[in-house]
Structures are given as C-alpha cells and as structure tokens.
Length: 240
Length: 259
Image (cartoon, rainbow over all chains, first blue to last red; front, side):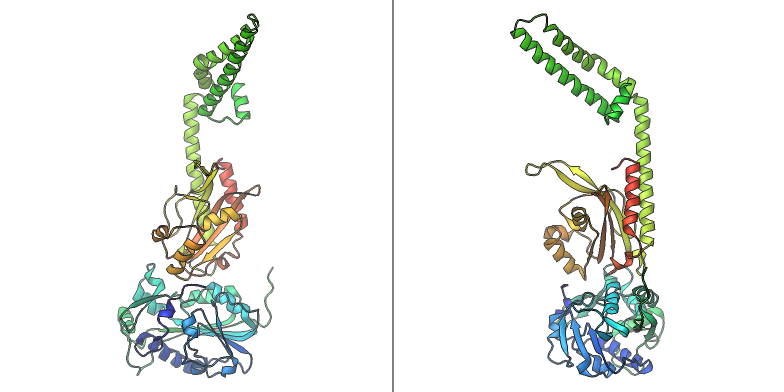
C-alpha cells in the first residue's frame, strides 16, 4: 500500500474550513445538473477514492449498488458516511478484484491517483458497456497556482485546523491528455466537460480567486473541475 | 607476423603487447633458471647451457628487443591514431545511444514524454573488496536525456536501485510510487539504500522502467527511464517493443567494442 497523507486529513476533509474543496463540490453539483450522468439501473458501482462516499449525494444512486474503495484506512473508517455494500481498502490502480464486475466506476476529485494505470484498471473492472465517470481539478486552475516545476506541480497543499500543512499527491492533466490516455486504454464515447464555480457560491476560496486573477478572468469563468465520462466498448477490439 | 599472432590472441594495444611480451619473457626466464639450477646440481654442465641460452634470450627480449618489437608491431603514431579513433568512435557511439534514447522516449504513448528522462548503464567490474572478489557495478554511459537526472560516469553497485534489480533479474522492471514518502520508504526496504542516501535522491520521479540489455543471454547493461508523471510505466511503453530496441543498443555497444 502507498503511504497515505490523507490519514491526517480524514477528520476534517469535509469541513467547511476547506473552502477550495467545498468550491469543487459546488462546481461538481452544478456540472452534474447541466450534464447528468446515466449510470443505468442495475449493476454494481465502484466508487474509487471514496472517502466518506458521495455517490448518493451527487448521483442519487441506491446504496445497495455501491462498493466503496479507498487506499486510506482513516477515510474508510469515517463514521459519518454513505452506506455501501462493502468497503475495500486498496489502491485504485491495483484493485484486488476480478475483471468485469462493475457497471460503473465512479470517483470524485481523483487527482491523487489519476493516471494510465488507474484508467487501465477501471477498464479491466468494468463490464462491457460499463461507464467510467470521474472528476478532477481542472489543470488550468492548478497550473496557475502551482506553476509547472516539480515537485510543487504534483502536490496539493492542505492547511489543517491546527495550522499544519499537509501535502498530498495531486496530478494535473490537461483535458487533451486525459482524452488520449482514455483512448489508449480502450475507452470510447469519451467526453470531458469543464465546469467553473457557479455564481452565488460563498465563501470563495482564495485559491480560486488567485487563479482567476492570474488569468484575468472572473472566478465564475475559470475552469475548476473536469467531468470525465467514457465507456468500455460492448465488444472489445481485437488486439493483434 | 607477430602483430597478427598477438591480435589473434586478443592483444589489441601497444600496452597489452608490451605486458604480454614481459610476461612471456619472465616465464621463459624463470623456467630456464630453474632448469639451469637442476642440471648444474646433476653436474650436467654442458646440458645446462641450453636452458641458460633460453634465459639469456628471454632477458635480451625483455631488456633489449621488447620496446623495439612493440614499436614495430604497434607504432606509437599508429597507436595514437587508434586511440584517437577509438575515442572518436566512443563519442559517436554515445551520440548514437543518446539519439536512440531520445527516439525511444518519443515512442512512449499516452504520457507527457517531456517529463520522461532516460539513460544507458553498462555493467563494469569494480575493484574487489576483502569479502567479495568479483564486484560489479553499473556505469552510466550517457548523460540523461530529458528534463531530470545527472551526467554520465556515475557508478552504482548491482545491489542497489531499480536499475540494479533489473541487472540481477534480467527482466523488465517497473516501479511506481505515489509520493516522496513511499519512494524513500521503498528505496530503503526494497532497493538497498540507506535512509541517509535517499535524502540525497531526487524524489519527485513517480514511475520507473528498467529494460535489460542482453548479449547471449547475459545482462551487459540496462536501459533506464523514469517520469515525474505517476503511473506512466509499463503501460506507456506497451507499444514501444523495448526488447527489440534494447537489442539495437546492444548492437551499437558491440560495434564500438564497449561490450
């Protein structure tokens, strides 16, 4: 198992204190209202990087379909959470489950583990015709805050209630590159929509304001999250 | 004729030729001296003249003719030219390897190739320690291609690192890390480094790939790539046919007699 800095954040990750995360939540809800996701009426849904679980909150799916997966024990141990069929402690890029068992793989803000291996693993776990639906912070937002140099560009910085700084892995990938990665892994019907912070949301995180001002745009014009959708083909292409 | 025989025996330079001649003279001289001693003890004085003649000949070869023969067989001017040529060939070989590395990185798909670095290591013999008579290391043959990494000439032992594991297993090795904490922990637990050593490592690389360079089934080096982007390897190299590319690298190294 990877080391997991999220353990230090579990107790307060969903607090209003973390304004940037709450702004992401608002953008996600707004995006889902504009671009509803069809996950079908049956089949298991794997929620990766689940934290306390958000499938019911964001997608309104029945709890008896959801399998929650997280690599952080403290996140999975949170008491105030959405119910699920089962909780799995595992790395989303290496899930100890057999192939093709889920009708959907879902994840919200998966920047801590997004990558080729994760997409390939999601593809493996999906039934033919299954849907991948995930969100990540928009690269446009992240690059303006973190710059482009390592290691800063690959790290998200949280300031806790006790004023400690916790660094967690966070990969920023442009929409074009995500599209390329999904195609390479075999997905089809790929759509990547970006969503800014909807008007009327308060408080606005200084990180969102700073990023918007660096581009010279209003906070409601800056892409904040990507909504990524893709399908596993019903019939897998032949590999020679 | 002498240079032909010497080259047939694997003697390629003036220095090797001179050392071989010296070794031969010492052997012949020692045997001759021993034989003279034995024959004298037996009072076969006339017969002892034969090994004495051999001893004398060996001494003349070593002390009088040796440098002359070396000069005839391997003229200093020619030797200098050869040396220059080999150096030139070495530079060209390194340039070819560098170019091949760059082109190999460009074949990686669905990743940011601008974040991938690569180099070539070859196995070299290290000076023995009291405990280990035959010690081997990995010599970094080229500067890193790509945004990160150090310059050529660095040597690591076979016991350490992802590249060392590849040289030992003779298999493609891929390792991914989620963050710097996991990198440091696994470098100590799995890859043979001391905690203090990992503090000096660059810790922002997330995905590593090492491909063995095989000559006749024996590992002679390692192709080594890493990316600061997570989860790149092995998937990004799926279509790159690294085994075949590794063979191209081996061919270049063979051509210039580096291996």
